[in-house]
Length: 277
Image 1 (tube, rainbow, N blue to C red):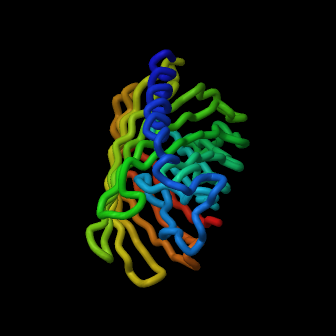
Image 2 (cartoon, rainbow, N blue to C red):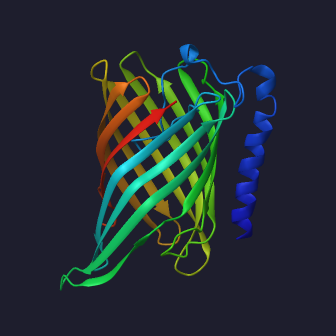
């Protein structure tokens, strides 16, 4: 637990230290929003797992949500199905380099069945844990081929059906604009989570993604990531892909899947949207 708190404090203090001179260098802020005619293209953390290295424009609000997310897992003799409804990330631009984010699951239901008998072992649902995140862009927010950011986060134990304790960590996303049609992103993420032994253990995630502009309004992505759990000593690997349709400059609709390649990995299917104002 001490390690958890120390990691979160270091992450948050580092981010705020970088942000202290932010308002001195840029005139736009939460209370002096970027004019709409000067806003850059909307950047989102979804639908891929790799987080964006870019922040929401100062003084503007952005919502990114899994309208419906279906997760299946068959391992250890049981089949688990989880459905998430409106798993939303509410984001507010604080400065031209920093935003704050609140990830809130509106409703979750989970059904567990015995693989041999098909009988339901457990069925539960309700409100899940809330995450608070703070993203600070170190470079690239205002242009250039590359961008890099700090993204510390805390997950609060607000679940109505699970006791996960306080969790948190730090994500480091990097972005590269290869050309007008191709983009590349990657990230390293370190977090601590409460496991079945009631102790905290590390989780380590690495991902990379390629984005491709198909037409003026349609993008696609392919992605791979691996997640290592220090408690179970299992590495889950995934191959992901999806489509993003830009209805307007401020509204996207997306769909895709995260396909677990290892035996213990989930199979995830989703449809979602993102919008800002």
